[in-house]
Length: 126
Image 1 (cartoon, rainbow, N blue to C red):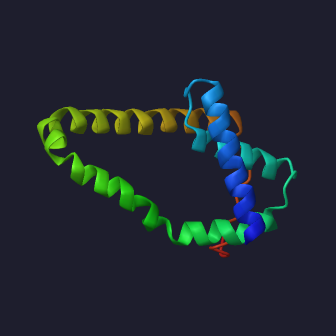
Image 2: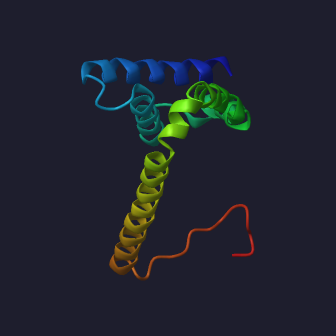
């Protein structure tokens, strides 16, 4: 678990450093996650090294939402005064995301019509 924590924190720090170099164009945590994914995909890191740490973090994900919830409470007055703008932004961006994903999925299905369905490990009846 220590090795997994080291790898996750290492890639987080690398991501933050790269984010500073590109002047914050992308968040460092996102860059670090992409770098970690690529290193796992390219088999530069053994997935077993980060599995226990990743599982522990994922199981306790609710803890990571506490700072965001406190932040929302701290800015309650500002949020309530801009509720309509925030609501419209969330609604429009959600609808646009659903439409774009649907169009991309449809195009991918037309491109590969005979692809085999992916086996689901959780549902062995398929």
